[in-house]
Amino acid sequence: MNAVDFRVLAVVPCFNEQAAIATVVDEINRVKRRHGLNLDVLVVNDQSTDDSLAIIQTLECLYLNLPVNLGIGGAMHAGYKYAFRQGYDIAVQIDGDGQHPAGELLKILEPIFADKADVVIGSRFLERTGFQSTYVRRLGIRYFRWLNQLLIGTSIHDSTSGFRAFNRRTICITNSYYPDEYPEPESIVQFGLHKLRILEVPVVMRERQGGTSSITMVKSIYYMFKVTMATLFVYIRLQNKQRTHGIITDCHSDT
Amino acid sequence: MESLPIVIQILSLIGALGFMYFITRLIVMGKLREEYSFIWIACTIILIVFSIWRKGLEQISLALGVFYPPSLIFLAAIFAIIIFLVHLSVVNSKMQQSVKELTHEIAFLRKELAELRQNEPPVSVDMPLVTEP
Image 1 (cartoon, chains in turn blue, brown):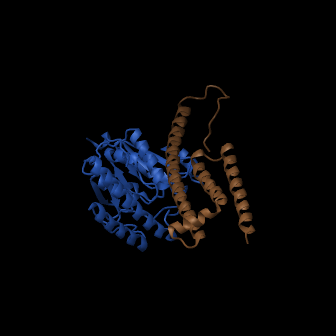
Image 2 (spheres, one colour):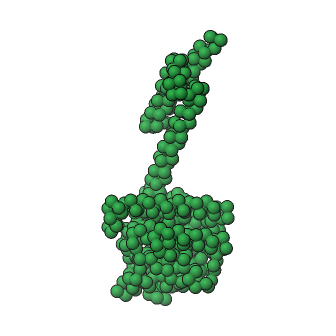
Image 3 (cartoon, helix red, strand yellow):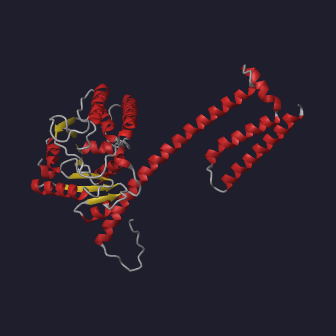
């Protein structure tokens, strides 16, 4: 199959990103035209309190307007549900703050075009170029790598990276369950237990172009604790389920 | 010394009955769902039983080997409160899940509606408009 045969949905979660959102969408559209991709942009407005919605409505993109603020996990889940229902073959997450450069989009799409992976994660750390995040965050990321290694035996270098592409099978799985809060590390365990092929490719990330990170210093302890708990519990839950039902291959069952 | 327990007994009986009345009012007014009212009704019944059966608490305490009867009340009360709080957390989690799903559905419907509006101009001027905020 050619790249054009795949219907791709780029899901852009947006919470108060009026400064960056227009550039992000424009960049994706430019990449789409340059490479002739069959791609739609879906911005998920998570109850922004600034002018994001008004800006989104003028852009060349589809958009979902959530009536209640759900957080990044809930917003992405809406996007994946949409991708599932509308029959997209691939879903990509590109953050609305401009951290994920659309120029790198093809790098995370190609392994899926070639059916080399079910989940492709754009990683900052495989080649140490571009924005490398703060020291504390990197320390946390090392901890998650260790946790993933322990639980599913795969070493993911950048488990907090949201720059990801999913194929249809992964979309099916995320359609029925996607973690609410801080979903990135937890979903890796979820994917690992579904025996999905996870591939990391090096990408160059930028510092956010606007807005503020959802994770502040005060919240980081809570973040570590919450993600550890969530990861352990999703692991136990799925293990139990797989012990009784085997590995779930049809994607309509939950989690 | 003998009159004091009687006064307390009457007071606690009035208190328990008052509480029962309050719970019933809430249910009647539709402000409290029946399934949550069971635990409160059970609590009031226990209160009423012990305010009538004065020696009961002492007898139960002795039977259980608790030397200071009031501590049995605290134990039981704290236990009941913790169980109920866990129950509320479960209810809340379920509710959060439902809210998330409803939010998704509303977002999809809004999108579909916006698309329909775009393709078909409104039939009449007084067609009710559901406007997005």
